[in-house]
Image 1 (cartoon, helix red, strand yellow):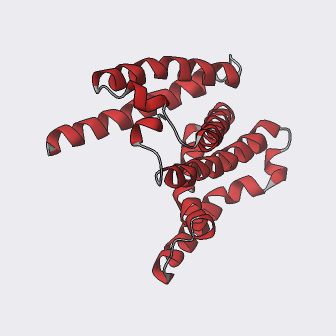
Image 2 (cartoon, one colour):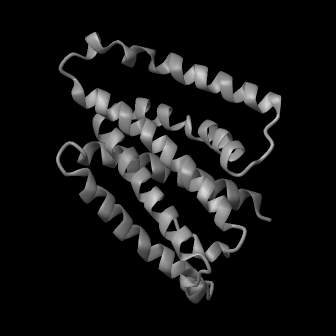
Length: 188
């Protein structure tokens, strides 16, 4: 295991996602979100194909025993990307990013409900504190009189929350698929 390489890749990934968010925010003022989602996905497929070809896993990437599960996961992921990009186009990046941090909290709740995983009291306590923190952060957005005429802000807030739920749903669906699928058949 090369720790320096792993840390470098993680830092590079975080920087690239930050740049992507800034570009989505910038382009979202001019172009439709659906077009931005399409081109982000179109440009992302090339490196995925190259990596799978390099690892000789191209055939495994399209082989599945649960095609409807893969289609469902793909649709949830596309919906999540559309919602996240729509939120970025309508809200300040800091708000959209902060709201997206509710996704792991939702994932914990969904894992207990849908995967029947055991979540202990200390985790539920952490999830509750996290949700309270999100509500405190969103507090200014609940005053609708302060946002009179700013329907974009309210819509952006709704998209950010929907995106967090979709991201959580994608994680839950990926976990379900892990029972029968290889990792090559889950491209993001």
